Every structure is written in C-alpha cells, then in structure tokens.
Length: 221
Image (cartoon, rainbow, N blue to C red; front, side, top):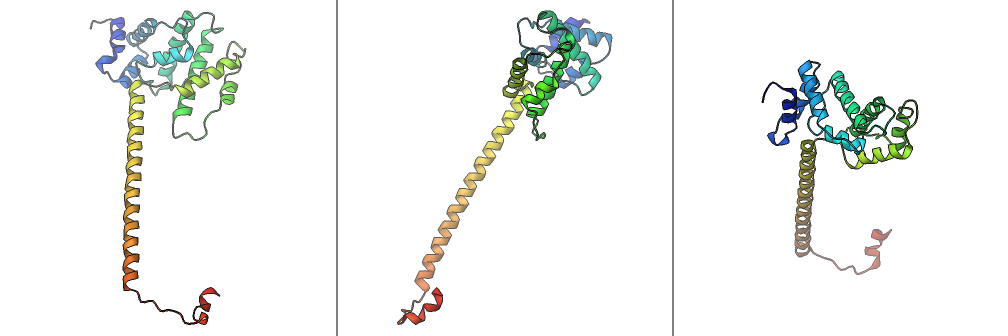
C-alpha cells in the first residue's frame, strides 16, 4: 500500500480482509485532505448508472458503518449524492434532493428496523416528510412509496450486522423451542404424578354405600 488515496480506497473495498467497518467509516468521515481524497476515490470508483437510489445507497454503505458524528455523515452523504446525480442526471432536479432523500432513507431504516422504536413511520408519513425536496417540487408519490417498500423489505445494513441479527433470531428460536420442549416434559411429568396419586387414593379409600337419598341430599343443595 503506497501513500495514495485511491489505493487506500481500494483496500477499504476489499471485504475479504475483514477490516473494521466502524473504523473505516470514522476514517473516511474525517475532515482532512487525505481522508477526504480517500472518500472521493472510493465514491468515484462506484457505478450508480441506472441504479435505484436505495440500491445505490445500500451498495455505498456496504463498505463501512456510518460514523456517529453528524458532520462526518454530512460529508460522506454529500459526496454520495453528488456521484449519484452525476451518474443519473435526469433522476432529480439537483444533488440536494438526492442528499435529503438519502438521509430520509437512513432515518427510515432506523425507524423501521430498530426494535426499540415502537411507533413505526408509516408510508404516508414518509411521503409527507419528503414533500417539496425536488427543487420545491414533489417527487411522484409512487416513487417514494417504492423506496419505502424497498427499505421495509430489504434493510439497508452491513452484511455483518444482518448475519448477527440472523444468529440472534436463530438462537432465540432455539431457546423458544427448548422452552416449549421443557414445558411439554414438565406437563407430562405432572400428568403422570397426578394419575399415580389418583390411583393410590382409589386403592386406599373406603367407600360407604348410601342407604337413603337423605344421606347425600346436602351435597346437591
């Protein structure tokens, strides 16, 4: 690896190396000339021609985890929006629209797929939140709805995060199945103990035959 931003960008795109995606995101978001050049090289090497915005964003974010600092996210998303509009000049009125809509998709991703958020954003709310963003004009409702559906059915997340969620869900399913099996076994044990107790009571009980209805009348009153 030489002292070249393009070489570093190529390194960051090599997912087989197992580099820390959080560290890559923090590095690319830094406001330093070399870091910004590495970001520009990475984005410049991607081809978004003819691709959907959410698909392009998903591809862009597959190489790193977005940093937590707002200014870093702004720099990264601004470059993404600029490249997307250069590759698809007739899609939006300007790069600002792609920038705002990309941010909306990231917020939608968090809203829909974060289990800690109970009241999920509806499709109508997503459309309403993005009114007038295309140079003061509305984007077609059906287009915004298709973006919503895309994020709903296919989360924008790193493969590593998705695999971790799958493992957690699989473990939860196994735990639930184990709990059910344990419940069934405990229930069967209780049934057997109850049967044994009833049979023992029958063998040890003395029954008296009532000679008159008056003997048992109080039981039915």
